[in-house]
Length: 172
Figure (cartoon, rainbow, N blue to C red):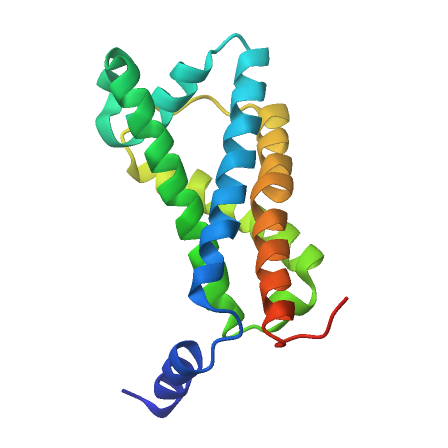
């Protein structure tokens, strides 16, 4: 392992800014807010909550997820929280390299929300079994806003709060 890689590894593993456990409340909060927003937006477009959750599980199962009833809706909810917890975990690990993520949580949270949206839109959805939908600029703008407000900011604010509790960054 090269010296820079070794130094980065030691920073990430040995010098935590925030304990990894901070990802749990951050991910749960983001997951709840995001799924509520998804259900509200979809309901306003005539799509019920079960169909939204089945749409999430269709990333794994393809179109047959819509025939799976409660089971695939439950699977979609579980998958949604796995993704939210994963996003929170990535943020917590990133704080070990970029301390400014917790010293400037509003800016970093908004930026992270956009990054999570972009990762889902351009990486995860294209490699999943989800049937692609046509581009809808107003809907995409709304989805970006939701990811900022319901994913990025909650994760950053919960993690920053934990950093303050740990005495890693000064109180704001």
